[in-house]
Amino acid sequence: MTTKIKLNKEQEKLVNVLECADFNVHTYEIGGEICAELETYTDGGVNMLITLEPFSVEELKNNVENFSIDEEIETNRLNADYRNMFTITNSVEDFTSFSEKLNRILESLYADNSIERTIKEYKIRNKYVFEGAFYVNAESLEQAREIVDKNCSLLLGGNINTTQSDSVVSDWEFDIKLKTIIY
Image (cartoon, rainbow, N blue to C red; front, side):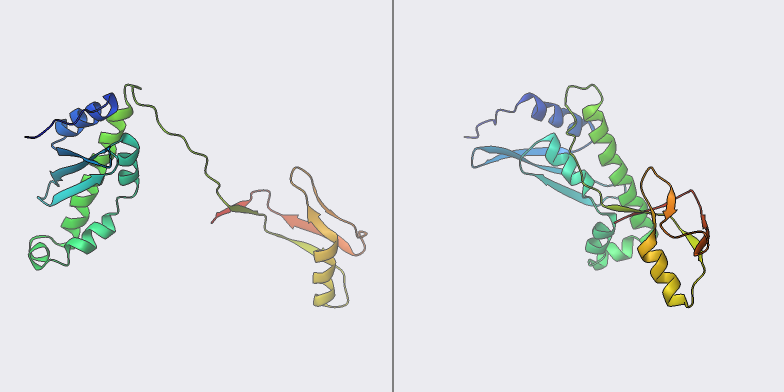
C-alpha cells in the first residue's frame, strides 16, 4: 500500500507550476524530509531529470542557477546516438531553451509574492584603478618611480596629491573615469 506524502503549501505550488510546465513530479521521503525528482524533456527530446533534496523553491533555485549548458552538452555528447542526432549548434539551442524555461518557472513561482525571494549578502572583491601619470624631475627613472611610490597618492573622496614640491613633481595627468576589476 502506498501512502500519500503530505506536502506543505510551497511544495503544492511547486507541483502545480512544474506540472503546468510539462514536468512529472515524483515525491519521496528521505529521513523524514520530502524530496522530489522532476522529469521532463527538452524541446529537442532530451530526457531531463532534476533531483530536489529537499523539495523546495530554494533548492529549485539552486539547480536553476547552477544549470550549465556546457556541462549538459558535454555529458550528452558522450553518447554516440546523441552526437548523431544533434549538432553542437542544435545542442546549444536546445539547452539554452531549456535553461530559459527553468528561469521562467522560477519567476512564475515568485510572481504573485506568495513565495518570498531569498536575499543573501555576497562579498564581491574588486579593485578600482585610476590610470595616469606623474611628471617627475629626477636623476634617474628609478628615483622618479621611488618619488611617486613614496610621495604621491589619491585618497577616496579626495584629490590627487604629492608631498613633493612643484619643482620635483611638476604635474600630473589622470583620467577621472576609473576602471573596475571584479575578481
